[in-house]
Length: 137
Image (cartoon, rainbow, N blue to C red; front, top):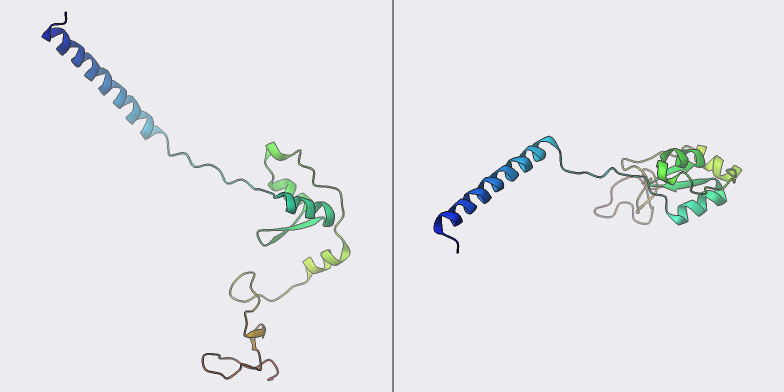
């Protein structure tokens, strides 16, 4: 049969152990930061097949060659088959062609514009549409 003193002693021992464990957790929490996984480059199967077929792929709005993709892949993805196709001349020329961009990267113009800085003549001058018509000089 347990006595009141035995129960009090066990309670005090458990309380002391609890305090010791809390101190250990606090020390660990201060020494480490919250886990934030590293952002890794992901190549979809469709992008991989496009890279195999054409030698270049558009990932996140950036044209990447096989070497660019290989450099971005992690060590655990170095065995991914990226093919051996060369970049076809038409694709290479399109990559080299400079196109003026608007204020928003990746967006050249938005309707009612028909070219950067030029408004569709059918709607030019209507309320809320400002800018020169495409045929105006």
